[in-house]
Length: 308
Image (cartoon, rainbow, N blue to C red; front, side, top):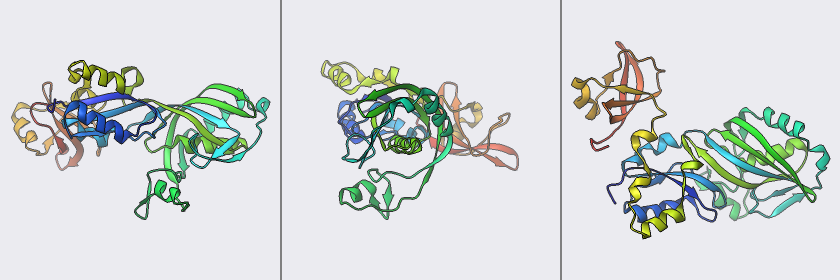
């Protein structure tokens, strides 16, 4: 199945890294050209789009899209990793009566928009050429620069007391690079309690939702039964349907296929934005909108072969 091209949306199980999933998909589809569109920690489940074949050229665009998560935050204890896998650092008894729906909803609203986060020590961020999680395992803590991320939506679902702790469940839609673990710690700090992320599930990544995700074990069972796994792939054209499209004039098709720039008469688009060029239903490439002396034109970023 080495001629497979498209995006496979899997439901990642707990206990596997994103790289583990990629390795399994390489074997199932018989190709080395496989890449995921946004790392999920081993304990995290949910939507993991994996690009196969020519679709690997979409990774940089798909991973930049917003993500949506179901989060359970535990109020009352903090950990070394900011999630449930770490050792407990601090504990405090939570006054459950004071953790009201109104208070939490107001807090969540106050976090909407652009915020700054300090990446956790147990993360893949590099400082001076070394991954933070490698330094953390050595017992080294280094200063990390805050990063700007955007929270588009925060919706409270449930507040549940559990002994001296309180679990708060919510969904979050955010920009890439947002750490849900760190968000839980920061929310807890705003409430005056230590906190950590108890549970996390990604329910949407860009245009791909959990309803269309296939569990990895189901995919492997179907492969063992001899089923054609290519039917589970989202086509490249469908995967980038969130981008605007433009029909190229017949006389310009060969030039576009050869990577040459082409004018965009009648297009109203922001300079620097992306646009897909088509010949009928055939995708020619992904282009960057530029402005020249004669108006807008498309500069090639990715040109796709005719079979796409």
